[in-house]
Each structure stands twice: as structure tokens, then as C-alpha cells.
Amino acid sequence: MKKVFEDFLMFVENIFFNIFVFLNFFRMKNIYDSLLALSDEEKKIILPRFFKTGKGQYGEGDKFLGVTVPNIRLIAKKHNNAQPEVIEQLIQSPWHEMRMCALLILVNNSKKEVTKETFDFYLSHTRFINNWDLVDLSAPNIIGKYLLDKNRDVLYKLAESRLLWDNRIAIVSTLTFIRNNDLEDTYKLAVKMMNHKHDLMHKAIGCMLREAGKRDTGRLYNFIINNKATMPRTMLRYAIEKFDANIRKELMS
Image 1 (cartoon, rainbow, N blue to C red):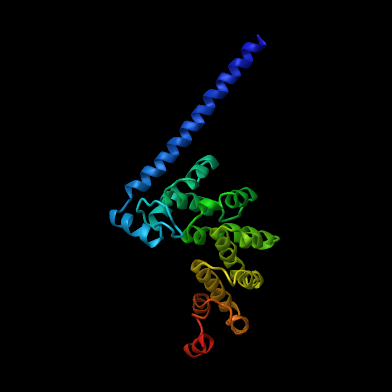
Image 2: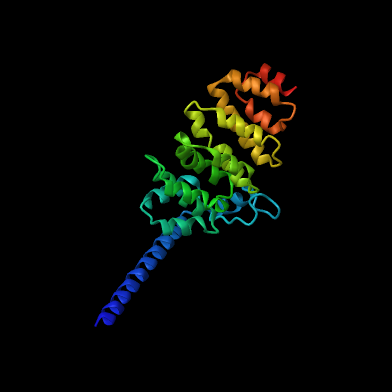
């Protein structure tokens, strides 16, 4: 009798598991169909070029449905209650907009607080957060926000990663610190990755330095003076954008 009861329980568990899997599949398909309905044929052609998806380029192999960010935000908002299993499937999708939707759901659900589970999930999936727009809309709101009152060693590990997107996550996450008048890690990471080979990192570091300069112009000026001899020109140009023309000319010379 006990064996019959155990078999029955297993049968019921399997039914519920299959229902759960089906519901998650249905939610995934619903999100995909919703995005596809908002697809724009022109964007489908333009976006792969803009995000450098050609052979040997930084976004090689990425696929686009042709959906604008505002429309992706609308879809993400409708699915803020998506199960973690659905978000995991979304972020591993070959479609750029599906991955963005996953990240926007995480950001939406982290407005009050970033949980340790969300932080860990993000860091374990950085290989799928594989273009600059995906990093920039999510890293400050998840990684930066979580680390605001915590040890930040993980950023320096990301900065040492061989994965370009880990490096970008490290520096862009500091935007949250900057907005809270904490500039130390931005400057330390800028020095650590000063000689990075990729132009995308030169731009990202330059942008974060520029934002830090809005909080303390003198500190940025002194940093540029001390480092401009080794600083890539793109990084320098981005960093000094907000200085007066005469000072920009001086610093670029």
C-alpha cells in the first residue's frame, strides 16, 4: 500500500512539473511573439550593423528581431513577475531583444533592492550580457547598486577577466557609486584598465571619468594631467567633454 501511495505521489509530482515546464514555455513564447509583433524591418537591417555583428567584430553572431528599446521596456514591464526559469531562458536566447528583456525584468525588480540571488545570477550569466547596450542599461542598476555598501573586490576580478563584457561591467557599474559621490573605484579601475586594447573600453572608461568629473572637476583635471601621456586618445576625449574649450585644447596637446 505504501509503495502504491509513493508511486501516486511521484505521478502527481510529475504532472505538476510538466505543467510548470509548459507554463514557462508558454510565457517564453508569449514574450517572443510580443516582441516579434513589434519588429521593424528597417531596424532588423540597421541594428546588426550598428552593434557590429559581422565576423571578427565585437558583436559577432548576435541576432536581432528589430525592436526598439522603448518597446522592449513595455514588454518587460508586462512580465515583471516572470519565474527565474523564464528569465534564465530569456537571457540565454540567441535574440538580442530577448536577452535585453531578461535584463530589464531584473532591473525592474531591483528598484527597491537588489537581492543576493539577482546579483549572483547576473554574474553567472555575463557571457550572455554581450554587447555594450546590455551592459550599460543593467550593470549600474544591479551590480553597482548591490555593491554600494559592500566590498567591491569582484569589480577588480571582472576587470582582470579575458571577457570584454566583464571588463565593461566592472567600470560601468561604478556609475552608481559616482551618483552617490563615491569616486574612488572609478579612478582605480580606470588606472587598472588604462591600457585596455579595445575601443569600447576606452569609451566606457572615458565616460565614467567624465561623470566623475561632474562631481569633482579638480580631481579629474589632475588625473588627466598625470595620466594623459599613456591614456588612449578616445578615452581622453570622452573624459574631458565637459571641460571648457580652452582646457580641452590644453589637455589634448
